[in-house]
Image (cartoon, rainbow over all chains, first blue to last red; front, side, top):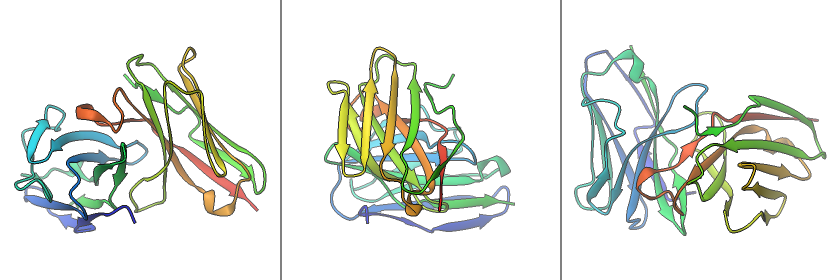
Length: 111
Length: 115
């Protein structure tokens, strides 16, 4: 158990709908990352928070993607107006002892 | 432009033998390297890491070797066990823990342990 939980584990949505994913570290990890993984690829870095500050967001895939970490604990990743190409696994990771530990991921399928 | 490359999409090894997974990188700023193991429908699980000040790090059955001049690292698993069958990802960063740029991953190698 990495201490990172993600909800929901699976999400099926129709093209054009908005979706939101949540990441909860068990303890107060100050650094939190979001990644996307598509079939046959490794995880791709999207954005980074240090406490509640989003210090890197230029790698978010488009302006339809946004992330928040309002109180420096849990984080949300929102995709607006989903497209079929957004179908992927979305992973959250947190730092402990200078290593990134990943949650179980949210599998998104856009129909 | 892939900065971390795992050129073997799959590798089949007999149970009890040594598994060697390879990884090459192109970014000379990378100083910290990690290996993750991933089962289908789960998040990556951290296995072992190494910083550029070392050339070897060992943890139980897992050993990572780093050749900085060749920009190459490898993961050795000895002896290989059926539960080791999974996809293995190599990841790299310029900063310990990933820093503001996150980790850069290779495409993974699917390791299959044959009984």
